[in-house]
Amino acid sequence: MDAKRPATAFERMVTVFIIACPHALGLAIPLVIARSTSIGATNGLLIRNRQALETAKRAKYMLMDKTGTLTEGKFTVATTLHFADQSQEEILATMAALESHSEHPLATGIKAAAIEQKLTVPAAENVQVMKGVGLSGTVDGIQYEIVNARYLQDHQLTYDKTQADQWAAAGNSLAFLLKGQQVLGMVAEGDQLKSSSKAFVAELKQQGITPVMLTGDNHETAKKVASQLGLTEFLAELKPENKVAQVKAYQQHGVVMMVGDGVNDAPSLAQADIGVAIGAGTDVAIDTADVVLVHSDPADILNFLSLAKATNRKMVQNLWWGAGYNILAIPFAAGILAPIGFILSPAVGAAIMSLSTIVVALNAMTLHLKRV
Image (cartoon, rainbow, N blue to C red):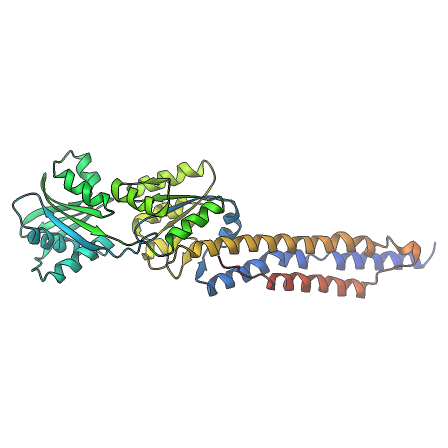
């Protein structure tokens, strides 16, 4: 038996073990993810769930809340109507009293209007949130409620629907004041679209993603906003549980991203495949979301989608670098070319193994965001 054979076989085994060390494959994905997370942070994208970067490439539907997401969420009172004996000023003052306990954008608009008109706002007691509807509470010993149009329809309460519909059709959000079963009056508040919302919706369509607006606002207001944005799909007068149901329904047909900013949006953000929160939104929404838009601009979602696509490309490239190195190098390490005098030493194998790791790291560092 040739004494050199055991030594040669051992040398080939050691070289194969060195070459087969999966450093490059082990670093291929984490390096890209770390790089993309850093790029996102510097571009106003707080990526809380890194899995979202991989899921985003399959996004088919973009479900979006209206107020504070597509619109500025800064309401101003357009008009106050009274349907009973109380004056417009009394209606507004009573509603401001109840809304003093709320931070909802509609509440902010009502309180600002009362201050602007220098009204005396009484104190409200026992104020409670009516989930998906409004507020209830006591003012000067009288029980009042602030509700939406859906509540009036569900309880078949009568009011001047013609006037209300006219203000809703103009794109205003409506809030009604009730005393018992009597509709005392109404406040119509206007909101402005964010400057980037229309272009954002158009770009989603170009990328093959279906944009859908979900809102708790009345149907006429939602229809007006959808028309301004070029949206063909929208659903209005939704409670939080209704939004969750809609997310589930769309998930039957593909990957769903949900964008919102309020407490009412948190359940749907949690249900969606990717939840995106507006940075200026509530803490609950931010804590629930996978991605946070620090600048509160929905157009930054396009940058997130662009980053997700670039990230996935780099992942595939790195996997090919890592796997390709092993596929090519292991046969050489085993001595496939030994008959023609080419032998890969353990030292050279170690150098090649280190080089593959460097190549994977450098490739990850070339990842960049192509802003939309």
